Amino acid sequence: MQTPVPDYLQQILDECGAPNTGATADYIPELADADPEILGICLATTDGVRYDAGDADVPVSIQSISKPFVYALAIAELGLDAVLKRVGVEPSGEAFNELSLEAKSGRPRNPMINAGALTTHALIGGGTASVEERFELVRRGLSDFAGRDLSVDEQVYASELDTAYRNRAIANMLRNYDLIDIEPEDVVRGYTRQCAISVTTRDLAAMAATLANGGVQPMTGQRVVEPAVVRQVLSVMMSCGMYDAAGDWMTTIGFPAKSGVSGGILGVLPGQIGIATLSPRLDSHGTSVRGVRLCGRMSKDMGMHIMEPP
Ligand code: GLN
Image 1: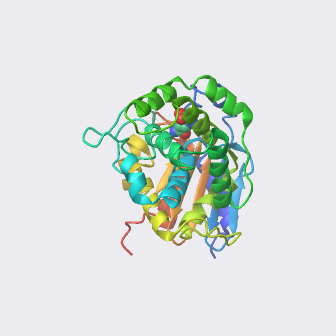
Image 2: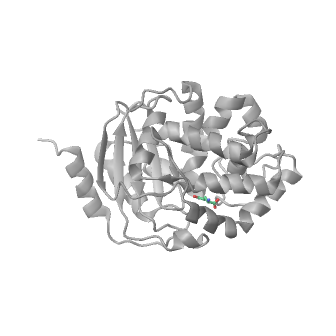
Image 3: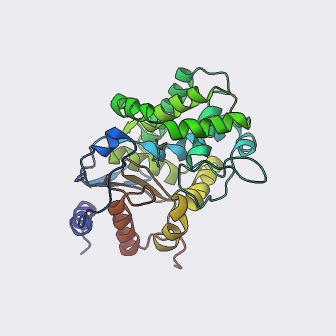
């Protein structure tokens, strides 16, 4: 007899929970203080059923997991060509917060690193929206992916904004090269607020399931983005979602994924399920140590590597 999904999820939490190595993100004071014991997992099917175990209802800030969704919103709003003029699709092989641009085109290499994500954020609202209007478009868009109204963790927002010198440096670089048309400080404020949107592991799985389901939110039935947008987003997640560990992730675990410095990992099996894990201690790439372990375990147990021969 097969193990029921919730029992299986609890079993892998028990087996992959130790050792709890790594460190919480120390460059954002609020995240440094996160409870390192939090451990949650959720799978969401494309017909809207969610299975979870552990701390799947504990809210955290979404951080970089917002990036693929805002990329999707930018493409939906402006069209792929307009977005490609500003942000590339090549893996950077560098850290997420690297101050770098593509040598030839002068664009940020991809929308998953901060340089690309700041640029993508600035594209929302067609360049005429105020900081608040742009953020509201982002918040509403992410809420549509999640299937419920999301809000901001104001403490994380204030804490990150206080210390966002590196992202300010990147935004100033982007402004200097005319990659963003609005004030760098406004882009940093909006992007930092985007990263501070509060989600649970269950929300992340629902957002992933919307991508797995070709852009239709499985619980609400709302079409959030077109299938062509999803294809673009998942392709970029596959090659760039794990930053300078993208090759290692893709060869060993093998499904498109995105990590965030609050400890979440979101993964997508196209046509099948959305996957989310949460554990705040990170490795040197800024990715959850136990989350990688859990995703590796699921990939092995359930044959989730998308290149696995049938
Ligand atoms: N808000 C974070 C930053 O810009 C997001 C980084 C991440 O989650 N990798 O540094």
